[in-house]
Image 1 (cartoon, rainbow over the protein chains, first blue to last red):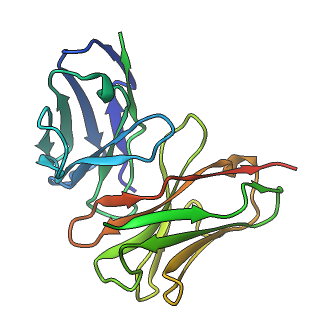
Image 2: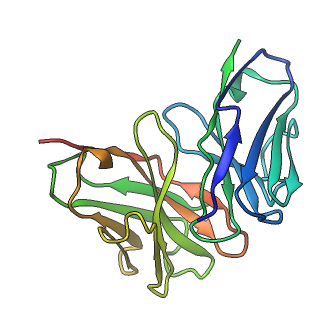
Length: 107
Length: 120
């Protein structure tokens, strides 16, 4: 199975900040990488697919980049509703494994 | 828009079989566009794939759970189901059903999740 490792595991930031979350795959996965946001008590929601494509309805302050094994999710100008947990997921081969998650907390 | 809703017992005894059903609305389990998926999340932890099924009946299971898992589809009721046998406390989790796109491998639509506790 392809292992996905996110860093950091947790992150404190303030409203208006810019933050970056990193995801690394254990082998090359091209651009087969998705990002999800999970708010407490809710199901995850798709933010970014194919490494850099913004899902319909997702604010443009979210962006993704990367290819091969290293990927980033960037959130510009953090809003109160962005404080949540973020997961990367590889879509290169089954089992379509998730990263362990990054919890973004208010500073 | 596809909507999914999990249903089933919230409490299961150790060694018994966990059974959940996902009812699909706004879409069809007979669609070739999706794999119908189960994912779980232990309290305070991350997301874990259980497996998925295609309308044809083809399945893929997480190797770590494969010996205990069965996913099936009922086209007449527009539902798909999960059975997990020989459960232990480690199987306590929120269980989500979701649609996994075939053309673009993304989890597009999710149920709200069902908490299943394994306890005597």
